[in-house]
Image 1 (cartoon, rainbow over the protein chains, first blue to last red):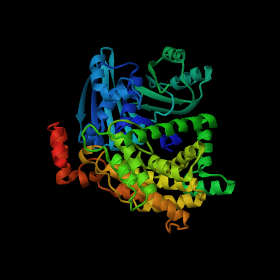
Image 2: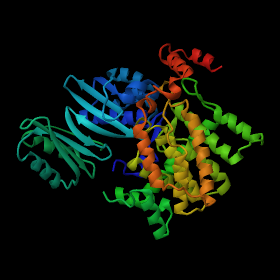
Image 3: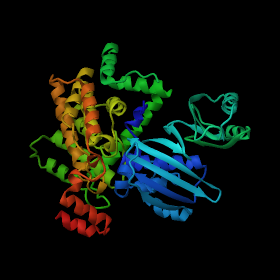
Image 4: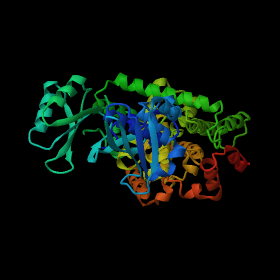
Amino acid sequence: MKFTSVFDIIGPVMIGPSSSHTAGAARIGRVARDLFGRQPKWAKIHLYGSFAETYKGHGTDVALIGGLLNYDTFDERIKTAFADAEKAGLDYEFIPETANMEHPNTARLVIGDDEGEMSVVGISIGGGKIEVSEVNGFKLRLTGGMPAILVVHDDRAGCIANVANCLAMHAVNIGHMEVSRIERGLTALMVIEVDQNIEEKVLQQISLIPHISKVSKINN
Amino acid sequence: MDVLFHNVRELVERAEQEGKLISEIMIEQEMLITGRTREEIIQQMDNNLTVMEEAIERGLNGVKSVTGLTGGDAVLLQNYIAQGNSLSGDLLLDAVSKAVATNEVNAAMGTICATPTAGSAGVVPGTLFAVKNKLNPTREQMIRYLFTSGAFGFVVANNASISGAAGGCQAEVGSAAGMAAAAIVEMAGGTPQQCSEAFAITLKNMLGLVCDPVAGLVEVPCVKRNAMGAANSLVAADMALAGVTSRIPCDEVIGAMYRIGQSMSPNLKETARGGLAATPTGKAISKAIFDNGNLESIKSLQK
């Protein structure tokens, strides 16, 4: 079931004009920032389908940048996001693409700073609801509605159990979990949706587990 | 995931068997899925209701979008109603003007509550705040109106679509109008089955509606589609309350809407490549906005 809450239907409270192209776009930008773990210094944003055709009219561009600046869907500052980005030292570029994606409202955000970069594909599925379909080339399906932990790790036996044990020790219940890898034996990505907010010390402990290279969280 | 209903048939059956309102089933399901208390859920919906009321007020005072393409029609309609000569009826026109007010605020990048989307955000609150003057509901009943709307929208969103880019305007204003019709029926004292009939009658009459926004903006024809969505929902609610039923069951109408959306050309699904967006005037407006950034030339086009 894609839509689980009545507030997916009666909501969100948002700045107009489009739930999919403005509110959804803000949420995609914000999730990308959360996954990156800090505000990026630059962003190359590829837009597909209806996003590519109509992003100017819908304020999709300001909303995506607003999201990268950590603005929520109802934040009036979305309207001034371009000027705010300049002040915050965030360079951005929009690249409308012609390729057909599975969903018509898709954005690929390549964001980064001096420390690193990240690629996030977000889709806006209607009514302001979004999904993350790819992170750094890993396919996944993250609805963005629940707190989630993303763990980049070596693809070898025991990694998943160690992370699950760590969560169990902190009484964090796993609601949904997915593991994907680009190639066998190399790097893999764990996506763990949990029932409650995750404390910073839990993430720290996970990052100390052998063969874990990166840990981030979203939607806390 | 365990839910109390997957389709309209299950929703209506549960409500009738348990002798409950549809809004009550929606509240119970929300408690079940999210684990939140009834009070928390009601409070959040109460806040959404306040946002809707404020948007209508703002729109009735007159707003203009950034492009100047939309705004001010809600005021024209209220002035016309005040003259006392309306042909289609004051309540219906009041709903139309309040739906327009909400969408004019949305087009002006104001704060609204998506119901189920921003482009279709006028229909549910517009009808609610018009019907309110006739039925004198309590605040709780007004909040219930939103849960009833939400219950039907929940079914459509999961079994079809509420996205113009995926299903055309029928999925947005069509869904919104059906949701409003069902909620009006419940508020007026109709049965859960009559809510379902009102939804079906409304959506049947919005099937095939394309999403063809001029310049890709949620302005033309979105604002007026909300007006007609509100009118459609009020008439369908009256028909259902009169005892008229839909020959095609509600869930099958939703299924038809989904398949029509899938077979609709991408040009007619929020890409601004077809329909009204592709008319000579639609293209001229788009060019004036994006090529020249010249709003004066848009104003001259409108004369």
